[in-house]
Length: 425
Image (tube, rainbow, N blue to C red; front, side):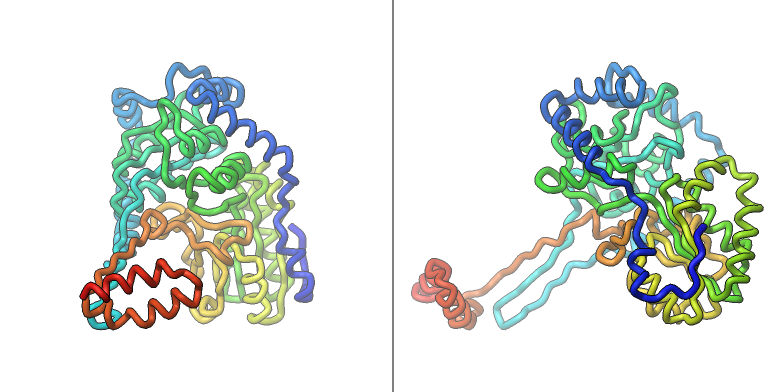
């Protein structure tokens, strides 16, 4: 990990830059995949599964018997863990449910805003290095709480089949339509529809650069998406009250996601940074994904700042997906944090708690998008529809305002729609 000492503010943007390679080749490849799915539907999906995943498929959708068989293979201890996590995630998202807004803005003028669930939702669950069944819960539970009626799930096929844990987590969320389709081709299928995979109104879920690029391209004209997303990242802000071993474990927990993940430490002294580095070197020795961790740490850094305000300023500039504040008064620091996907306060709030079981959602904006996007929440699965009712008297009182504005914009038919009603009174 690189070390910076009190970098000046004019260098913050450079330090904050994510190490993403040029994606022009990816754009071309993903564009080709989307075209194939548009033109050849299921046949393209089966062909691409053979070419990309090395799996020969005769059909895409799992049968009820396959779902039941997979669920029976899930270890009882994990079933209990998932049940506990579901309770917390459900409780937190139920608390977010929006209420209907109804107000009389003027006598005889009633305006209403009503929350409505998105009807057709598609979930994409990665199945690569670490099949993320926890992401099924993070997307499936808010969809269920919001009242989305038609939810499907796509996840990459493998020679051993779809992981039972993913299938079981889907059933816990009430999802019974599961498809063996991965990568950009799965996103394309959910966006445009094929014979087997029905078209969706909105697609959720993380993925690699191909999945992300497909979501971005298809969101222009075919489907809504949750957010832009890229490689995972964590930032830890620490002072002398932090435990170097805890901090190192948090940095490593994010680094093991993939070689392009980033882990950033902001601290108050070089000696603390050195202690964390020693802990990282010690703890990573026993990690099964050590090679991935080491490649990730090459893209990561430690930064020493003398004061809290500089630490906060840099954190807001970087806009991390996950931010851990291991400092004396984390709430006071957090008051000034404006750009982070999810914030973890204190020495005993590891990022992995949010990944699995505390209740908050782990589907979060990366690559600096936390400056303008929220993490997934109940609102993502709903839309707000407005209604209004105006009485005869209400329209008469508004008529002068409406007609003056309409005529000033040169829209006489708008004004006439009011005049004809007022005259008929």
